Image (cartoon, helix red, strand yellow):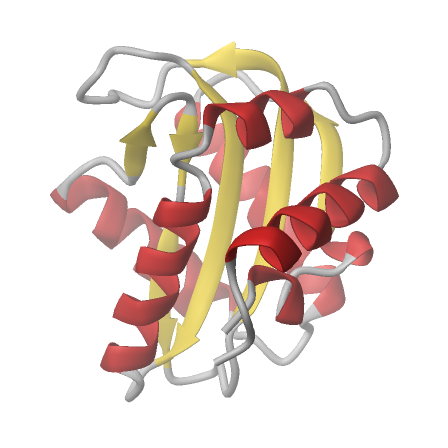
Amino acid sequence: MLITDYLTKECIQIFLEGNDKKDLIQQLAEFHFIQYPLINREEAMSGLFERENLLTTCIGHGIAIPHARLESCHKISVSLGLLKTPTDFDSLDHEAVKIMFLIFFPKEKVNLQLRFLARVSRLLSNNNLIDNICHSQTPDEIITIFKEYEAKHFHSD
């Protein structure tokens, strides 16, 4: 399972701007719905903020992964936002978020969700990768960075 099996350049927003965590999540979600119009907006937004209210989805090192399992989602769908200004997400390490992954999973696929989140977390534990992503200027650059990193460190499973 590779991130680039699910993340496409059409789902990457460079220089995402917002006032706060909630605003940024809403903006990236609206961007996501353009590519995935069958996802129910109300269910998705409710799921994202229910999860976020339980515990921050910021995993540290400037990365947040808001996510939800949805009835209206039939396959993993991923969007990435590269924030123009690092923003507070109530991170446990107190580091402002620079990169935000928004992920929706099919409601019944709990194991898939856990495996995919573990893969994303592992991938984004590499500081060099994070720096390269943060200095990217286009979605194509970000896809290339992920593909090169995955080719070195992972295989499709």
